[in-house]
Length: 150
Image (cartoon, rainbow, N blue to C red):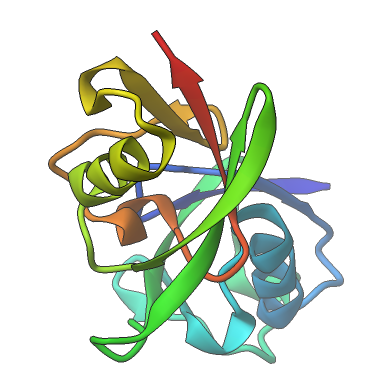
């Protein structure tokens, strides 16, 4: 088993793989973990883009090696549906992945009638910072964001 840390956003999952698997297999695991489609992913190691058909064994990775993920952005005006999980009920909002976390927080304030200053948002147990764009947290179609009220 080899564990690969995936860097590039605010969420940095660790993917478990074997030496017999390919880069494409790792991308499929990344899709399961953070929800980014395989076709939008590029993985880099030491400033070299990894090809989908490369075997992990041939890449010479050490355990806990860091790979860098870049994601092809969606079209500028494309909106995604995001599931907001909250105590007392869940809901969906439509938002662009290029919008900031503060934009989502303001939208939730309007829909839930809770002051945005009392809202904490988390994606994969990472607290989302107001000034960052949603894509920094791999927010895309049908992902879940946890909402808590302070």
